[in-house]
Image 1 (cartoon, rainbow, N blue to C red):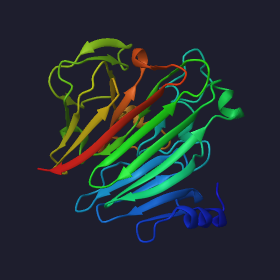
Image 2 (cartoon, helix red, strand yellow):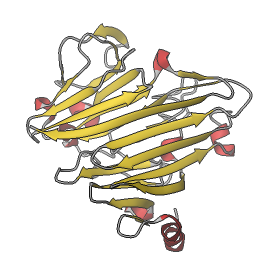
Image 3 (spheres, one colour):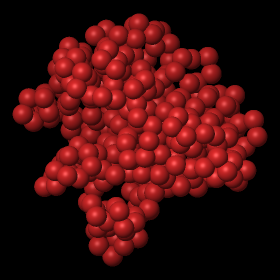
Amino acid sequence: METAGAIADLDRRFGIPGIASVVEGNGGLPKVRITSPQATGEMYLHGAHVTSWKPTGADEVLFVSTQSRWEDGHAIRGGVPVCFPWFGNKEGDPKAPAHGFVRTKAWQLESITQAGEAVTVSMFAESDANTKNWWPADFRLVYRATFGSELSLELVLPNTGTTSLRFEEALHAYYRVGQIEKARVRGLDGVHYIDKTDGNREKNQQGDILITSETDRVYLNTSSTVELEDPVLHRRTAVAKDNSRTTVVWNPWVEKAHSMSDLADDEWQRMICVETSNVADFAVNLEPGGRHTMKAIVRVAGF
């Protein structure tokens, strides 16, 4: 946890007066607060975690649990956690942290820049003795979030080592909905998926996705833009992506939500995860000297 003096120093070094500032967030954790003409937003150094994006004239797009734990060693429940270098449980290592280690790690602030009325926050995480307990690679992972009339999220990994790297990655975005049973996800009709609630059986999507029970699906070999239609909040949220071959759709439903200490019992009704990712058989193989970039672009329109 940063001290108040350290947070003030970050603000002096990186802040843009009237536009972006580094301030103390929940649990005393430092965050970047954006107040630009196009949007307001928040991004914590803890996990490089985007927790808010509200385009001007629109309601909050992201969901964050009221029961989230804001402390070192714990992931923030909601917003956009970064999963890396594995997704879910690490194969062959049940003691490893779920979804990798960068979402609970303090990142370094690299820059805050303004282009027009959009603001880009860049952070990075590097390998250290602790990460090498779980993954032996040397790495420097860069994450850029651009807050404007759209939200652009870019995860970049160069391979500066002498051996190839294989990793999974996901931008585990939680979107706010008015009522989950009335929302629908479009853009994945006909796509094969792994149903993690049914023994990892592979199935084929027919039509739109409607959430009627616990849902945990990995849609395979798809680069399609996905659209979340919400008739209660009267908006459509489109998630376009680049260099991503899988899309994860998740909602815990009643029983699983009750078992999660950092999610209120009824909050499953007001959220859905639509995750830009490269997981399972579509994990990334990156040769020495190579560079991998995965990107998600989120846009919101009313209807």
